[in-house]
View 1: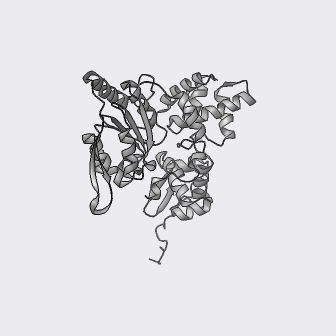
View 2: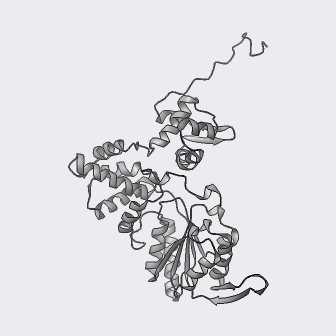
View 3: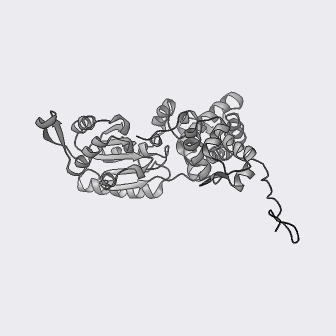
Length: 357
């Protein structure tokens, strides 16, 4: 297992981090939509998935296996629960890191009931022996359980009831082709547009009994980095500010003041993001600079800068990765309110060049 398989240390503690902590998990359970009609965004995925589920119900069969890929916080777990609800089936939830041996997977599969949905989060982190067992289970609804060791080992075939596997991954490229090919439906979750996040914020505010106006919702949505989980987390923090330092109503001004307290700026950058940009611009003139050098300048681990800060900065067009190192874009200079250094003037006619020519 490589370090790229794991979220960097401290990523879950960031207010704009897309990974869920304990508080997020508890609140998300209350805010999750219960069916596809309530699910906001991901229009194409919803339409395609609706056809898959309707057709399966019409045939009286279990739904095809589903693979959901995309960044954390976009709704993969929510969609898995909706699939189970739409099919009228129970759901079993586990994750790739929890299945380190083929026996772990065999125990789960053998206890499934007919039509049950098995949600396997971070499926790319499952062990190779379990992965190979999953091939047969998905295709033939059968697993071979090995009893004994060495020459006396015996494979006992175990028939499984038809079930639906919903796999979720943030790194679809790490899945081996034989596993990807066994999914009947594959969907990639895209980042949300601000207008979609505004609808998410309004819906969550209604469920949380929070008063918010259209401009307040737009202010929160614009700083949510295209991710519903972050939008809901920011909403809760702004709600706290509004209750303590305002009249409880979230307006644009209240949201802006609240998020300034939590150091989330108008583009969704937090302290770490701005520290990376500030070091790149002020200390290294916009680059290029090596990742390790940049991490030392920021006072963070290399992995934290590379895996936590850089993806959003690159997606926002504020930073670029080049073979020579990291460089800042003109948008980064503008966002930080700094003026890029001017290139040295070119040698004019009659002026000697670098080597006197």
